Length: 172
Image (tube, rainbow, N blue to C red; front, side, top):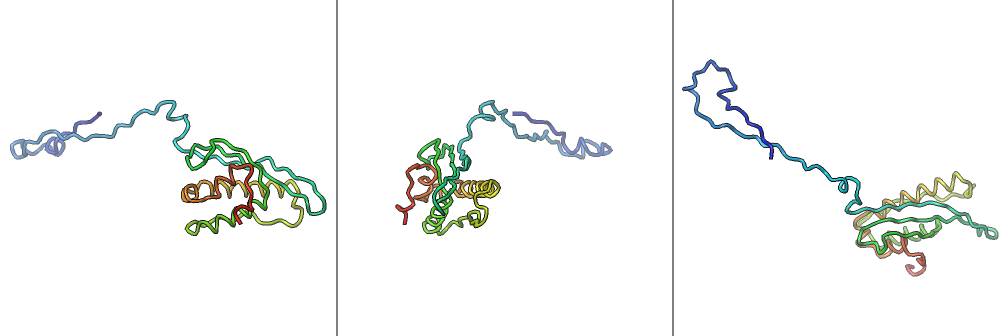
């Protein structure tokens, strides 16, 4: 531990006083905190808890009439114990996100669930609209999945993010 010595006040103040008028003081020590040098692993290693959620790779599926829809790939990387898998990839469509949000609101009254990006009624399959929606869905999932009360208290969170067989009807 490093420390530095500080001279008593009688030696640092005006020396015109006689040394006999000042009480004899011992040197005081002021300690400064020591900072441990971080190792390479501590700086660049895997953090204690991490959660990465990415919404990517939108795909538009063509059907008949109003059967067209776009779904999104959800990639989750984590070491948080509440999640069953360290790495997962699933696909969800916007209507799945709507059901998921409704279920979250019903099961967790103590947490304010953020809104989804708004519904789009014109040009909903244009690249700009799909990208804007993807960004909004990713932001939504990052907020929801990162919330500690939802990580430990939600029955639907992990399934929606990680289970490829997730069925919204099981939660109705």
